[in-house]
Length: 385
Image (spheres, rainbow, N blue to C red):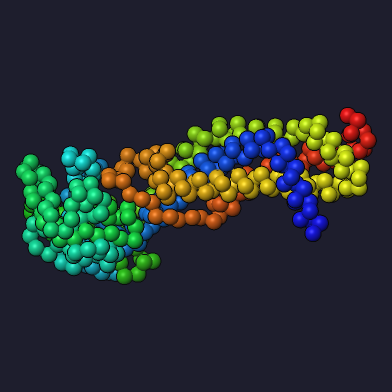
């Protein structure tokens, strides 16, 4: 009851100086919302990358020509299959397509029999006949297409090709299928005009995941012109890219954060004569120094925790409802998918804890310290001054 009474008095004391405290809460909330948005967005994108690569091949073998990705001979797959520990080896056919009609970048993938278990069909099925395709929900929305409609694309010979839409699908991660167009291998080879005997790359399955780096090294020794890329390397690259872009944004807002810290310190440490007189009166009527410090502690907690909660709510709304429209393009980079996709909500409790530690604790400390100097002074002297 004693602590509840002190908390009640703290809230009433804050309300008496509501214009000053509301201004601090407003600035505090905006700053936390910006920082939390950056942290939440980068973490969500890292989780999206993990979701995409969960069923990715253990090793992807690319051929390099002049230091750039080039088509790879299909015959190389037979030699790779002879390496001990290697399971299924599959040549893959895929490419990128810019749709001038919608300004969208689509990913075209060839399919040979069956389908990927990671894809959950929303409606329809995967292409099984010539001149048929399955498309992502983003492509369907941009082109305003449904199952049974026709998708017209311009091939490498600048000729319009018509594909019958047999499926529109989504997956657990919208970033995986939003811009996707799945064709049969034969249709894709003809669409891009790929030479016979050449594929885009080769996927390699390794039975023992601990042997993936060794298998990649053996492929590199056997075929020096290739670049074996393991799934873990791709994950580390995504993590590094998103962390770097998030850090760049945090650096851009560092000046604003520093200005807020100066403002908060000035507001918290600048005890007015009225507040000093209030502390003196409380001491004179029997409050101890510990009681006064507890009062100021609760005042700092109310302001900082309220700002933290409001800032986190604004950050969640900004990232998951408005798609982080303020700085999403910076974090996603030039390869931002068209049509737009919604980030799947992922929250890192550790990041929220660190953010709370870096905002709540310093503010509460800056509130208690100047109050302590007034609380240990003689009450008569404080009230006279």
